[in-house]
Amino acid sequence: MAIKVRNDKCVGCSKCVKECPFDAITVIGKLAIIGPKCTNCSKCIDACPFDAIENVEEEKTGAVDISLYHNVWVFAEQREGRFVNVSIELLGEGRKLADEIGCEVCAILCGDGMEGLVDELFEYGADKVYYADAPELRSYNTDAYTKVIYEAIMRHKPEVVLLGATHVGRDLGPCLAVQCGTGLTADCTKLDIDPEDKKLMQTRPAFGGNLMATILCPDHRPQMSTVRPGVMQKPERQEGRRGERIDLEVSFKDGDIRTHVLEVVKSLQERVSLTDAKVIVSGGHGLSSGGKTPEEGFALVKQLADCLGGVVGSSRAAVDAGWIDRSHQVGQTGTTVKPHLYIACGISGAIQHLAGMQTSDFIVAINKDKDAPIFEVADYGIVGDLYKVIPAIIGALGR
Ligand code: FAD
Ligand code: SF4
Ligand code: SF4
Image (cartoon, rainbow, N blue to C red; front, side):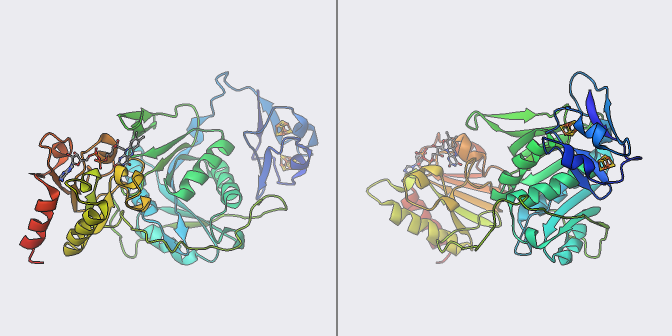
């Protein structure tokens, strides 16, 4: 048995909300929505003066009626009024999935006075934008964003919800999945969808990156994934493209938001943006060899990166050794990158490093070991001492 609200009878009076001992009911507009906290105690049935709540038979599997769910949603993450790149990348990926199953791509945007961003989402491919506007949504807040997006999901029932695997997406995704009573596959690197049964095939590294696992969420909806930044292609912007904006009702009562952002303090530490870089020159454990220090090695790597207008990356071994800040780390537990040119210097090519850079357009590897695995993914491999090869390249570039 399962508790259901009849849309045709509910008037949104909220009497059932007060009666529920498990805080399982939310009223959005003129409709009560029963959430996954419901224990089937039936108290709300008697509380409703309009006979709008029923206890109905449900299949023993506990599976939800997946035929009610449509469309692919992308969480449009903005920071201070600018979208993070992965949200735009996900609109492109969402478009591909939606075309496979013949539905719409929708973005969900939360903010305070950010209507100006809606058109940008249409231009990157959103057919609809669900927009939630409130001062409480100005910057990311777990409780506020979870409540608003959860209510929108319960009301509009998307088939798929995609979020970037950013700090925000990694916090919000699990909260939403728990509230919705569905699954979440974190840190996906590939998505496919079955056009027949609409099952999302969510692929991510597993067992320390030694194999790729494809995960399904067959019985619950929405199907939810966080996706690593830099893995999917950013779609072309189509100036002037428009869609439908749907304004979400937003209301908070005392206790809904348990934490408040008092101040945002930006780190002064030098950080690098690897995801947008067109050229990356990375250094690994091999920088400390032949009597040279890692400082000398990274100075050489930086010199080459500067010559090519690029930025410095690194392997995890160099980060773990304390040679360079973690923001430079490329790989499974670092940043996934897709530059036009990736130069790996003194990096062996462990699978966890390759997971973060092997889709780069052009890969050059410099390693003194001719059997190093990095050469298997390299377009050009230079077998030699990086302390001889890099200065020779810089010299050839005329610097
Ligand atoms: P090494 O494997 O020690 O390779 C050094 C290379 O330098 C060697 O191939 C050597 O031949 C070469 N060399 C030495 N001297 C010279 C020289 N003078 N000139 C030219 N070549 C030289 N690693 C990552 O990079 N990113 C990740 O995100 C990441 N995530 C991980 C997650 C998990 C769960 C685990 C278990 C591991 C992860 N790792 C990651 C670590 C990974 O397994 C490797 O240990 C690491 O990538 C090795 O770094 P490296 O290639 O710099 O060092
Ligand atoms: Fe709807 Fe009945 Fe609940 Fe009122 S008490 S919100 S009519 S279900
Ligand atoms: Fe709340 Fe009980 Fe009604 Fe479920 S059946 S919504 S737990 S009052």
